[in-house]
Length: 187
Image (cartoon, rainbow, N blue to C red; front, top):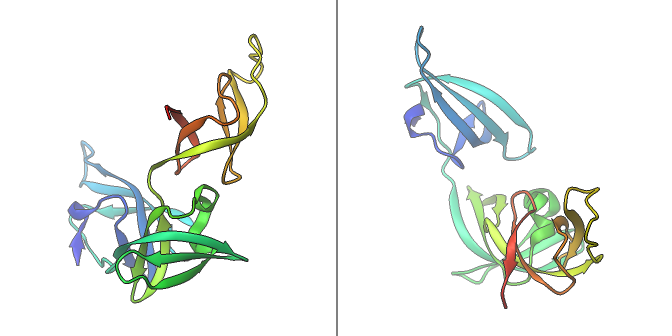
C-alpha cells in the first residue's frame, strides 16, 4: 500500500482488479475544501485512458512491477522477439503489448519490459533514438505551405515530419514517445 503522496509517472496501481499505469498526476490544493490528486490513468491491458481523482492521503494498492532490460531481436509475423539482457531468455510479445513504439524498434535496441507475476505488461523504449532517413523529398526554398516541414520515412518504416533541410541518408535524433524530430546527428 502507498499513499497519494507516493504517486509518480509510470507507477502501476491495482484498482478494482485491474492494473492502471499513472501517465500524469497533479496535486491540487484549492483555497476552499480538502486537497486532492488529479490523475490520468492508462489500463495496462486494454490501453484505455481515464481521468480519476483521489483525495489527498488516501491509501492505494500498488502493483509489484519488475522492470527488466531486454534487447529487441527481430519481428516474427505478428510477434516481436526480445532477449533478456541478464538471462538470455527469449520472449515473444504480440503487437498489442509493444504498442505504438513498434514503429521505432531497431535490431539490438535496449528496451525495458515491465513484468507483473511473470507476464509482460508493456514495453518502454528509450526516450530518444537515432535513425537514418530512408527517403524524403528534397525541400524547396520558399515552399512554406507545410510550415517548414516535410514528411520523411525512417529506416524502421516510421514516417515523421522533419525540417526542409533534411536529406535522404541523414541521421536524426527522434523522440520515440511521439515521433517528433529532435535534431540532426553528426556522424
